Image (tube, rainbow, N blue to C red; front, side):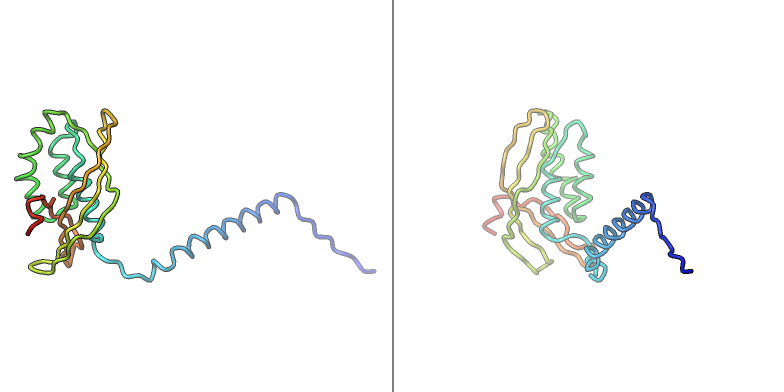
Length: 172
């Protein structure tokens, strides 16, 4: 006599198998998307445009409640040594008294960035023009402006924010 074997699959095993299958498919998609990044050589620092954007956003975003030291620190994290010294020794003493007097609290974001000029001498630098939108954290009022900044590249740190370029310099 021949015996027929019957295989029974419980609903619990079907659900478990389906969950495992979905997890494997999801992991496959995640790995597939990241595969090219595994073979790219990482560049130090950030791009010139990102250095310009983040540097200007930190420079224009002020908060009288957080204080001058917090503002300087936020810029110096993104700036060259010379840029940090300029903020600490020139910009802060010049601008911060009016920030405190008016209790300013602004957060600024760049809406667009356009490369204006590239220079290779004496150091590799770029001038960027950025359109920014600054919002007053207390009133919600927003203002747009256009500002030029200078970013500098170094071999070990990539691109860094140097300083704001004033209108009087545009002829030079």
